[in-house]
Image (cartoon, rainbow, N blue to C red; front, side):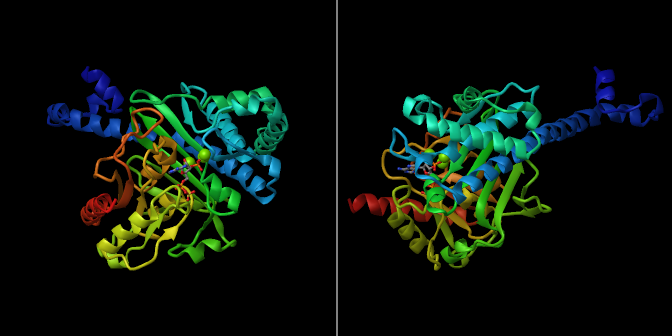
Length: 389
Ligand SMILES: Nc1ncnc2c1ncn2[C@@H]1O[C@H](COP(=O)(O)OS(=O)(=O)O)[C@@H](OP(=O)(O)O)[C@H]1O
Ligand SMILES: [Mg+2]
Ligand SMILES: [Mg+2]
Ligand SMILES: [Mg+2]
């Protein structure tokens, strides 16, 4: 046992002094813990590299589609939400790249889209266009030797995302385009990819092709078409980094540490149908926030928050809506550097229960210092709203 520990720690017992030999027995558990921590953190490096590559390439595909969106590129899903060739193409690219880059790992992916509608007769034109886009995107990264993918290959890659996730093992979590409505308007959207390990989010990458590299603290600053395209990434214990999507040097970022709500602006959904703007207005007023809300589509909100653009994110879906894990997993770990995301009752978000985040309605994010005051304002506002109904 000791011999194997000594081997693991790469120590040479013959060179240890008689004094340090007994000390070794006491220090081994500590050192082993450090080695295990380091190897846990190290062991996600390959996954992080693959995830960054997959999200950046998927972002290229989405940018191309957003520039030249055709009427035939958009469909409506069973739940009336939109889906485009870019949602499907992005999912196929990410799924294909993760499997190719990490061949030794068992592969499980929980993702938003599936191929059911694409297999219908009337969707054959759309499938052809998606397959072309996927092949062009992979070829642009020199993956031409594995090319071209057939339409069936693309459908299979999309359907790799049917995993149920859960509390055991590793599962990738993907929203191939978060904020599809924003994408269709020409506004903000994100490719959001995370890794769960034993039910916990351990890695996250957020590609936000239209988010300015400079801070945004008001809605007007989002309209800039210059210097846009951010890639945020984080894995447990290493903090959060941002780089430009075209590959600049990355910088470490963290959530605003302000303790003064008067200085804190807040983010919320652009779409009033996705989050109750009247309720967040009430909460902000109670808290003493002076600035008007900054409304951004998608998990770009988590990205902006992670670099301190604003200090609070409020999300209160209308009654009956069930949150999905892919709408929050990547954002959740990206804001963990200085921030905390909970449900409206202050409970941590639980990503271990499958495809849904079963939780108390509402998600709130801010720094540790502001959280108690925010939770109080949320509880009071919820009571007030309930009693006025
Ligand atoms: N009714 C309803 N209520 C709450 N949320 C809903 C609702 N319908 C959809 N969605 C989900 O919202 C995702 C888009 O993110 P946001 O709501 O943050 O952005 S925005 O509303 O587009 O501004 C969006 O993600 P995508 O479908 O990936 O775009 C949906 O998962
Ligand atoms: Mg959708
Ligand atoms: Mg989404
Ligand atoms: Mg989506």
